[in-house]
Length: 297
Image (cartoon, rainbow, N blue to C red; front, side):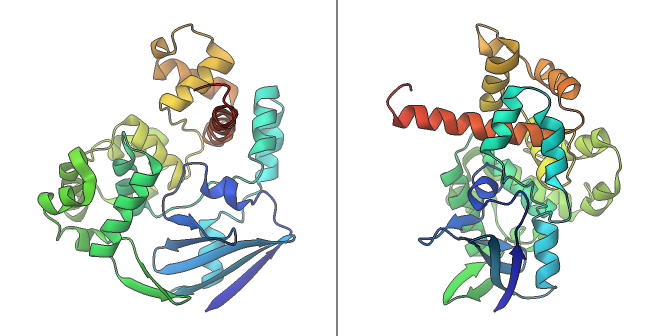
């Protein structure tokens, strides 16, 4: 077991990072810590006083480097928050609520498959499907007396038939996962070459070639794996938030994605993706609080 302690971290709160909708392989434990699988590592993260304590096991690689890269620890989020917080009170309040959010550097292959699964789905079900895929096609890792499974490689997942995938609860996504896995293995979309592109639109065009990757899924992959902070993923929740705060159309369904993204480009200073996470996380939690108090539905 390896250990790494981060003292007095800036912008690092477990609940903000793991519950803002960007990742699916982290689970809260009884003591408030989270355990997750990062490629060939199982890692437990715990807040203790003014420190973040990472413990885990790594099959290969440097434990500290894996953590620094995955949690984006070399990025100064205070600068982002300072810039965005000056935009308006909505942004300021959202940042104060989600002060500990960091955008994770997720593995590109895993991110692609995970967000194809996320289409028209809910987080508990997404997590359950990903765990089934990992159990059946990943590799076993033991940590702290428990067994975990790595996310399957393209080679391993290619052993699954469409029927196999359907039986894991993928529904209409079964053929899409099957086809995308084959495209990536056949280098019809070369992930290593895609990473080298320096233009967001070029990256998006490549991702959109993959079966099951539409504009929203592509933008999530661009933000949560390729770190393109200029994208602004739009789903039903984000459209609702942006309409309520800035557009004020009586019928939110008439607010189109292009209108929202044009507003984001103009307003959020090249940090649209981070702004989206703060706004989405704050407003969705406010809605949940309203429900719990019986004030709305």
